[in-house]
Amino acid sequence: TPKPSSAASDVYKRQILGEASLTTSKFAIAVKKIGGSEKYKLAHEILLTLTAEPNEIYLRRIATELKLDPNELLNEMESDAVLKEISRTAELAQKLQISGTPTFILGGQFLRGFVPLEMLLQVAQSERKK
Image (cartoon, rainbow, N blue to C red; front, side, top):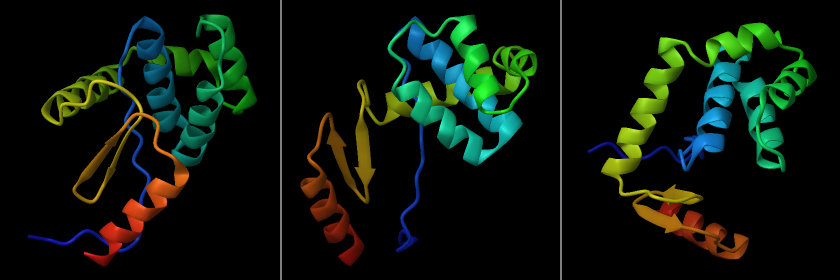
């Protein structure tokens, strides 16, 4: 069996927990497909701080802030590619029995819910030694 790389990698999978979560997930995935990984990371950070419902007005503002075409993004949100990614992520969450966020997977360990930074660092260090 292959060993995991010693380099850490960020993999963001957006767990769908309701209608607002579905909307922001589709938006984030559309950003990634149109704007690339860096824009996706920025969108992810913005969406994490969103306190209002993610309606079209807010999504257009975020798109503009990211210097992306709002109309193109809103159309992409309903594309087959985005909807397939949503479906694959839901299937993966079901297989891994992930029903809430956040869930961190470090090596072979699943850390669910809030985890203090110190504990995350300890687990990461332990997993790297394996």
